[in-house]
Image (cartoon, rainbow, N blue to C red; front, side, top):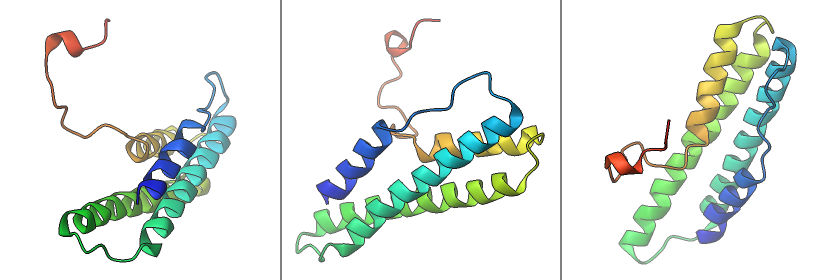
Length: 125
């Protein structure tokens, strides 16, 4: 299980984010590639987790199912966002922003709720 999860994180860290200052068409192509890459990475993790035998330990099996669900949702969201973006006009700013938001959601590494809300944990402005 660790190999599938680590593989996704390693691949994710190697992804180059799009440069700023691109035209609408360049941004669309770049973001489409990024979404395709995320869908492939998450799909690889899903396949790796699905290939594992059931664990005799209930906690380990529960963890596997949690990761499997998370990466399946990420794969499907990235694939869907890519298809929608690819069908949109390069001048469709709304489609571009929607795809960018989907990409950010797919690559999120932190849980939605932060463990600490300490004022000192916030980055400087």
